[in-house]
Image: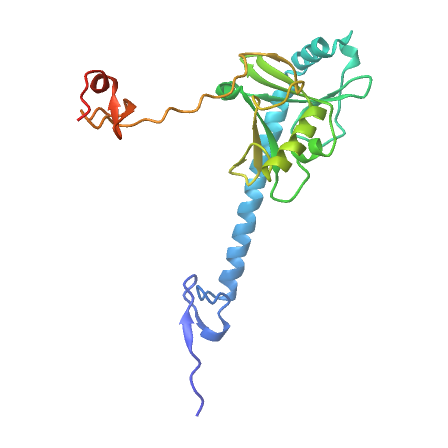
Length: 258
């Protein structure tokens, strides 16, 4: 007498399948549903990649309309005589809009939209892509590029910009990575799976910033530690520590220490 084979219903299509042949031992789905799930994930990944590429193309073309403004800044900073000395470099697949001088010096240009103006004291560079494609940060650290023009647009003009020497930036990066034991700055993950490295400008050594138009760069002031007054209960305004108690100005000045 043959023993009946143990079966379970597939939660995807409800067909009975042998328990021993379930494709996924955790969820006990049939092979067809397992393949369908794989195809759906693949299609979703392709859709996300297509959207990311479309967004990249749109952003790059938006930057390109500021080519003349980029050129005027570069002519001023590098003291070039005429705009004909600058040509667009299309040899590298990069997020940057790249201009090249007659002396073969490459200037990577990146422009941020007006909504990012509050972050004019830092720069962001693409650090990684899901498929392992060489990123802008990797290219810069490997020696590509001579200068970096990083700006912020306001309407149809470049309102704030910083012109950086990439040779000095590379040396600083190597020294800081050795000192910290990890890359300097902060890594930010985007929805498309790519990451950007955020670098504040204030720690950069002298000479890195060749020229700048915009507010002065200052080291951020650390936040003041706030305490509640232990005499009157005033919230967040106790700045005096007396007899092992935090007191507000009023309680401290009027001797309300007990």
